[in-house]
Image 1 (tube, rainbow, N blue to C red):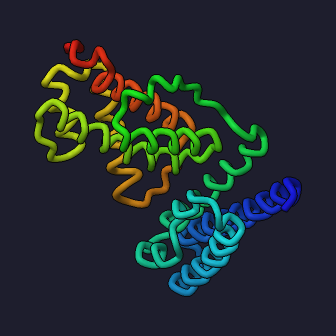
Image 2: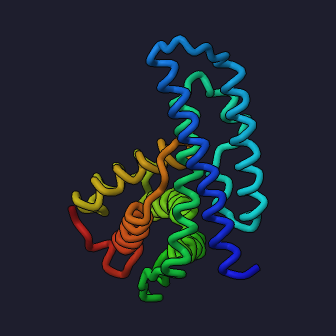
Image 3: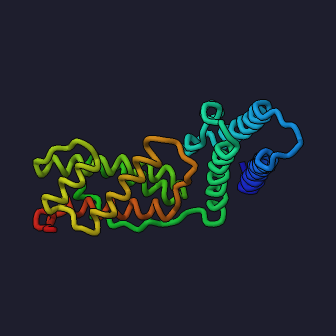
Length: 242
């Protein structure tokens, strides 16, 4: 499959998504304007869902080898939450965000996240592979996948850190707080980690949302995890104080 064909296909899929979003917006505006035009809302919503379903099916087929494809909600998810047009629109936004990321890949095939191998050597073995895979996803502009893997690495680092310092691990947030109270995490890093824990919990791991993981969030996640690993497991980690 040539690069030119891929670009054309992505543009075609994006145009279909934009048209669907435009139709949803138009219908929503008609309803809230109390227009005299009669609309069978249930019928229209089901029709929109079928269009969405066909679009998603074509995207899944085209990107079948892409691990981030699961970030796009299914039509069944849509049917269980389609009580208004704004929710329908948010699901189409997910598709548009996904396709935008794919277009960026052609503008700059890869981006870099420089890392010294020594930064990984002191990390627990269970975390090293996760970090490397997250970096690989980041470099291919798979920001959502990067954040997903970063979340797993985050949990692994905090669990191993609590184990190393004899602390009880009840949850990711509590583990971070326990390590901070022990003096292993400085205040500025602690605040960043709490923000990332909330982001991972609310936007990535627990619920499908309309928010698209950004390049900036993925880069921040990676940088914070490397700082956390250094604070907990480097040769100087036992000397770190609050």
